[in-house]
Every structure is written in C-alpha cells, then in structure tokens.
Length: 258
Image (cartoon, rainbow, N blue to C red):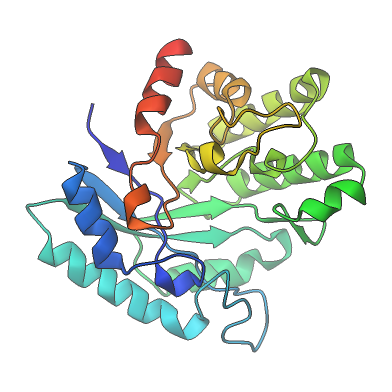
C-alpha cells in the first residue's frame, strides 16, 4: 500500500514546531510517497482582523506566502516525493461565502474541512462538558459535519468524532442515532474522510477511554465503510517526528473492519 499523509501543520499556525521543509524531509525519511502540506488557514470570519488567533491559525496576510512556499517546495522535491499543497479550513455555516472567496483566491490541490467550533465554543474546550448538555453539543456538532459535507467547499473532512475527544463517552444509543445520517450525507456529497491519528494522542485515559481510537472512531468508520465513503489518512502532525504517526495501527484497524 502506498504510504501517504495528507494532514500536517507547521510553525505558522502558532502551536506546531518546525517549518514546511522539516516535515517534507521527515516524510522522505519515513518513505512516505505522497505528503500533504495543510496548515490551519486564517480566521476568515473575523472581519477586519489580520491575525485573530495567533496561537491557532495563520494570519490572513500569511496565506499567499504559505501557498507560494509550498509550491516552491513541491517543485524542488519533484521526483523524490509527491508534495500536495492544501489547507485546513474551518467550517462556519454563516460564513461560507467568505471561505469560498478565500479558497478561490489561492491554488490548492485539496482542502481539508474541519468543524472546530460548535455552539460558539471550541470542541477542545474541556470546561463545556461541565456546563452544557452533552447530547445538545453532540447533535449540534454532527449537524455541522453534515452541512460541511454538503457545502461543496471541501475535498476531505477532517477528524470526524473529534467533538468526543474530551466529552463523556457517547452512549451506544446516541451513536446509533447520530452516526448513520452523517455517513449517508458524506457518501452523497462525494467528500472523502480522513482517518486522523491525533485521536491516539488526544483521547485521554479514564472516562471509559483508552487512547485506542482514531478520529473517526471504529463505530463511525463502520458506518462510513458501509456507505462506501472514500477514506484517506492524516497524522495531524504538529512536530516533524509525528509524520505518519499511527499508520500501522490504522492498517490493523481497517483490516479488523474488513
């Protein structure tokens, strides 16, 4: 099987280390055949602010330079490794026009679509689970995932089930309610879904968790496979040494799922 990794981050996002070249070199060392440069795009929905979230996303003004650097490296490494130029873009349903304009102004080989904000709060905000009804949050999140799939803005949907990273465990009955419509909507949209191994790093022990699930988890993966959704792989690396992280575990999981 060809070794590839299409989800990576770099210093521009403010919470990763190393430059774009460092990640490509790490991919080469690991024998990766195809590598995607896909740092966090800017917070396009914050009007009139160049760098709204410096610890989370690049500045609006940095995006052209990011694309230009990635294209230069794509040419430089041609023949040694297939470099794809992408971006991870947040989906906010009230700002799809702004995102479409931003994407049209840049040449991307692919766009990762991510839902990072639900009901006005980050999916990584651990405090919300003591302050909000989990079922309300889960339902809102998966409605946004369906809307992202249907938006025609993205090629690949990132880290499905990430809302569950720090939440109470999702009951089986809730999975049975929420997961099938998501898989069916994605299948109709034509988007691919990445198997994102940051789940192996983010899922904490305790709370019924053992850190043995990627995003999406195996229950959602079964639904995606049932619906014929194309799958791809992303390590969501934030350090060069994380390139390809967990790939062997994913292959075993896919074998287990048939």
